[in-house]
Amino acid sequence: MKHILRAFLGTTLILGLAVGVCPRTLFQQTQQERHVAWVQRSLTRMQTVKRGMTRADLLKVFTTEGGLSTGLQRTYVYRECPLFKVDVEFTPVGRPARDLEGRVTLTEDDQDVIRVISKPYLAQTVAD
View 1 (tube, one colour):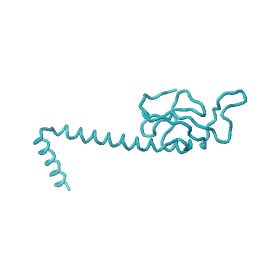
View 2 (cartoon, helix red, strand yellow; view 1 turned 90 degrees about the horizontal axis):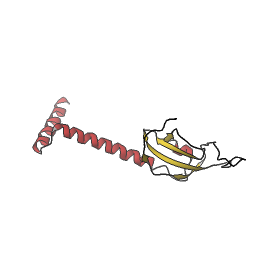
View 3 (cartoon, helix red, strand yellow; view 1 turned 90 degrees about the vertical axis):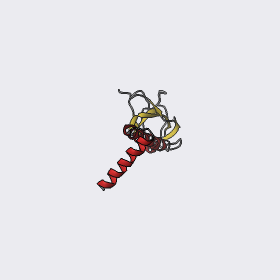
């Protein structure tokens, strides 16, 4: 196994030198490719959450973020990286959207239905 790995690395180095690429650049390219692949997989996963799904469905991919929110409107962050975010509005299920005094409810329920979900975006973390 060591011989195969050594031969592969040697061939990669020779090919890289032949085309004028240093070994460090080859490593950076593969690292960059891994980053791009991770972001692509993450975006694909984030985009599985759609209008009409429930809060419980959303919480499999995202988690809550700090900051101002109500029970029917909140920013969520991707579970694997809190810099990826979506803004979500819900329709309540089994309860009114406002209390007797007209205030938006603070109650959240896993059965609430996603009414609006933004495209994923990048932003700094919000801390309360």
